Length: 269
Image (cartoon, rainbow, N blue to C red; front, side, top):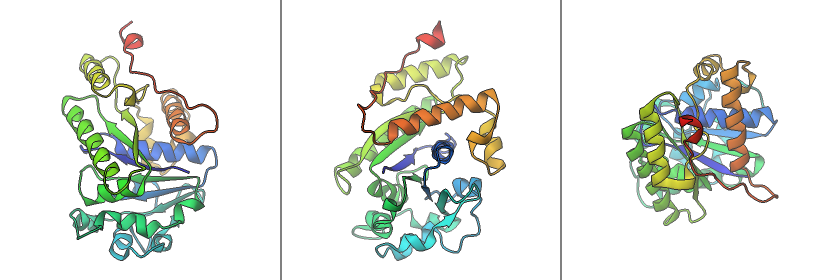
């Protein structure tokens, strides 16, 4: 049972889109899933229709007693297969360290709760602050999200460096498993160039294929519906990518699929 932290160092790259896409793929195969929203913007909470829960991730981090996070779990608006610990704006006050072991507060509060689920997804804020450190300290797998833009290249490197720092300190079992490129347009030469640069810098960590721009993604989020319920060519393509990404992240008994290096051949041919 993986605990997956989805992070980025730049806002607007579609981090919550990837977190929700993984949740949708898990929903589609009837997996019991917990989404923990640590982003003060609460986009994942809104898309999952849980804006009126009594307790939030801010309350969980404030208390941080072993297992207290269970009191904040509510069913999502999708159905009772997807549970949520929602975010709220007051999380902004928890972005700095509050003392020794403050990065372990989420892990302590979760205690054995993740064992009740097939998958746990943590949606991080777009920064390297204390909230992201808490998420990485509680996770075993990190997924970094980037756009194919010049400034996002630097942000992706920073995010991967943050994962390495946490793996070397508070969470030795943490591993970065995929760098997902979102909002990709194969007709944009700048996108092609930046995808190539990401591949050169990070090799097989760059997940292939990238996620294309797709109008069904924001539409499904506004409708408080899993992406997998939408029936359009674009939405099915993205849903397939999310299915494959989830397969790659889940522990398997068969030999693990090797991550391919990014190839531009199909885009340039």
